[in-house]
Image: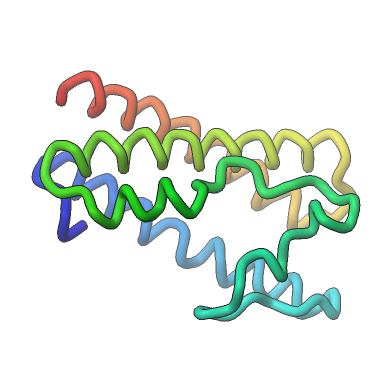
Length: 134
């Protein structure tokens, strides 16, 4: 949020942060109950890439170079990169939620996936509007 200049982008970033915090806590608790190690801040993300073991990849994740570009950007350039990256990230989450809807069996995960599908599609629409306005 410190790099953004557009008030709508700043509000969107704050909303995303507020919404994803509880989602992360819920998913972490679910993983712990399943006996799966939960990534911690500072952990190497590739150590938790389950696609290396035949599972679905984390859809919508930005690459290291894309993250570096975002960290270096300021102003409108940041706003555009942020929105494009978050749209991609949200589309990945929506895709994973759709996979859960067709292939999942856990009720808690299905409820979270339905919520993610609904809220993140709405956020994608709003981010596209913001991007068009820049």
